[in-house]
Image 1: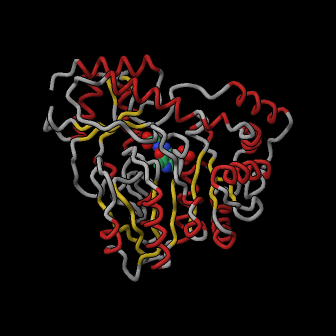
Image 2: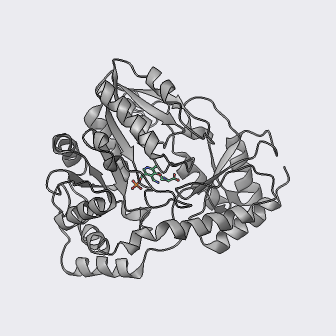
Length: 387
Ligand code: PMP
Ligand code: GLN
């Protein structure tokens, strides 16, 4: 066999390495300030680290139960109940996954059969579409402007066909930072009910939400609960993106099918970390303070980039701020993001890879989950760019 040839046809011929990996590598190469890939620059709390150490030393080092450590499932059930009054049974309706990435992948694989259509709102997080395609499904795109203000639900309705199986939604949203309202969730529920669709709701930024907005979880809308896989993650909530611990909430009959795939994909998830997170979750302050923490960083960054000529609305949620540079330059966003990394020493993420096919809205995404000093130095460098 020639080392250079793959002995079968590619299942994902159009997929390359993710834009996050590419921009982080480029940032490293040029020793640029990395405001690109979304991960916190700061460490998680020492208390959480000590809890991991405690459970490592207690010998919690073998396989966790397939569905997850019961203490963690119980802690999640309690948290969700306190947050929105919905009861998910830890035994049969909560599964611990290897990050939200696995939860999303398994949820998609659980519902999508060859030929099924899945509604995807774009810009969309990059992992949804490849998972749909690997199942032989077809993404049906609802294209939104990166700075969209509201959703045209009648347009969404017009995209539903007899083949539509599911809809994937994400609030607070990566990459736009938009947050859906109760009305949006109610519209979603109406469409899902009318056409008997399943919903996959990506809520990894649930606690990173600003200006007194409230996150509306699909798990808080009765009509959605019975047909939704709610995918969450502790990565963003506790500054532990490297631990890859997430979860999926879904009614029993859906969870049963979900676990059939989860058990053969990863079987179970890293044990001592699950125990540590379970104990850490007992203090709601550990996650309820996150919105204020990031709102201050958002404001700091936004004030620091004032006067450059970017056009932007403050992000409503997530740890991303988008800016439009259309009045400064006509440059393509991929090229500009690379140039800013290599020449100005600031890495960002261009918006176009979040769209299917060609699109260039002249928008860049900056991650503000960084030390204040990093954000200020990044902004200072951006002020010096010659457009
Ligand atoms: N969904 C969205 C919208 C994300 O931004 C991310 C990661 N940043 C994920 C899912 C994946 O989460 P995890 O790291 O827990 O796999
Ligand atoms: N979700 C992160 C982002 O949007 C990156 C995760 C990844 O690199 N896969 O930047």
